[in-house]
Amino acid sequence: MGKMRKLWMPLVAMMLFMSACSSNSGSSSTATDADSTKTSETKTETVSEADEAFKNGKYDPPIEISSVIMPRDYTKGETKENNVHDRWMLETLGIKHKDTWYPAGSDQYKQQLQLALTSGEKLPDFVMVPTDAVLTNQLIDSGQFMPIDDLFKKYANKVWQDHAEQNPELWYPFTKDGKKWNLPIMEYTDNDDTVLWLREDWMEKLKLEAPKTIADLENIMDKFKNQNPDGLTPKQVYPLAISLKSNTNTWMGGLDWLFGAYGSVEEQWNKDASGNLEYGSVNPGAKQALAKLQEWMEKGYIHPDSALWDEGKSAELWTKGDAGVLPGANWVPDWPAPDLLKNVPGSKYKAYPVPAGPDGLIGTKWQNSGVNSSFMINKDAKHPEAIILYYNYLLDNLANPAVGSPYEYGFAKGYDWDEVDGQPTSDKDKIKDFFDKFPFITGPARIPNLYMNTLVKLADGAKPETPYEKQQAQFRKPENWYAAKVVMSQIDVRKQNYFTGAATPTMISKWNLLRQSELETFNKIIYGKLPVSAFDDFVASWKANGGDQVTKEVNEWFKSVSK
Picture: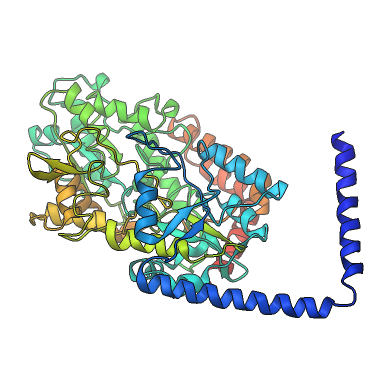
């Protein structure tokens, strides 16, 4: 039955098409002219209505849009059809939902998108696109979406446009055929940049100074292991907590800072001296980093099970009190540091800058260009600018609310803030039925540099003045403030991964094998199962077995998006 249906459906469509052509054969020109005039009038009306909405801050009368709302909880008996966010959106912006998608999760959402593309199902006006270069290109190639260049230039607010101008690389994943296709939704920058978290109580007891070089850090690790102030034997201490399981350039227990000390950040595409992209793991500096890691493994500075550990497991070595150095982000005081304080009474920790290599080189990965996700706009959307009006409002009013504004303490009274004993508060421990998981279409609004700049201000001893600053002062620990200052003191050493496109043709066929070879070779060198010279053989093989072609394709892509 399924096969028969596939056969007769195109025939019916063709018969209808021929019939339509026959019946309109004498008036096709007139109909086309009329349609063209009607379309032109509609566009004029839409543009006028859009300009009026931006002038007044809302649509009047209200409009309907369809979008994607990722999984959210609801409270007080509310539902996805009736909740505090949607009531606010209608009252404040004159926008209401219609035919919006509510996927069960990110994996299910990707499948839903793929199915819609292949079946021809009508897509929402505004489609959220996860960070997935392959999916982004599929959506662009579907022909169902419009470029956003003109809309963004005309309607996006100053914060949004300024960030895009200062970080043009954020457009790279969304650029094709000389056009921009996705609206970037902004994220805090530098929130995952690497610092070294050291056991400060050990540093104080051993009277050690901050490590400025890799040699200084080696001296500290040697003292931690062989003169441990907690009385642990050398066999009980493995000073450096790292993960070698699947990635070494990772968010916890990573080694980007060590490779950077020798001139390259591994597992990403960096700019070389000529401005071309090169894969960091085959840079000569990676060989020196591997030699140092082999030495540290031999000396017992690294736990022999590190190749079996993911990021969370590597952090456990530090939180149990058996390690003294944990590479991580500024937010380690929120997790996993509380476990250290619980497991090891009297323990202290502190963030330190990443050290320089023997030639004075310093480098770590850089989180991103301040982009969390993106939205594409359906070419059939009646109000394509509505998503910009919505996000502008969030950025202008909620991302950094002003004193005395309706959002000074939170989004909605009785939800994420309330009056307790006559005083407004956003302390969730004081608010009955506290709730802050609002179904914002774009997710929470974030001004990229605001978070780190605020923490630096607090670390410098300044009094918090704005609602946002007061919130960070209340909920972020002083160790977190200081770590942000450390991050920003080394902002110039952060190295961006410049390749953010879909897999190139050779990557599709050969990258998995190249990555497997890289991981196996690096681990064998680190564990002393191969000599350091094996790195040269790996690089030669990597280039010959597709690496050179991948590099060529990556650079062709880079030139196409960075014109």
